[in-house]
Image (tube, rainbow, N blue to C red; front, side):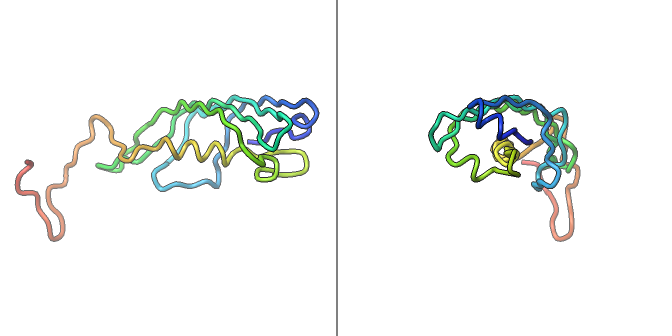
Length: 136
């Protein structure tokens, strides 16, 4: 998701809104994304620290830990922090910043340790070298 660097330098603030595209970003638990929308702003307050605030909403599709089915997980991420050297670290070209890595880091923080649907059932009771004798 690109942000106009010229507007940030001249106005001191730039607002952004759109659908981030995480093509090329991979994580073993994430199978896909649905209806992601990000809205926020970046403020240059004259110091090396830039204030960045955004709200990221949508759904990520995770893999069930029980039977590998799809598990939808709602995202409602609110981020408001100061980022040091924002321009140097996230500059994509002469005129734009790419804040996608910041969004991605915040999505990764929202992934649960174990994702399951409420109706998931573990059907297999035996395999090669093992067998469930009692449920308890």
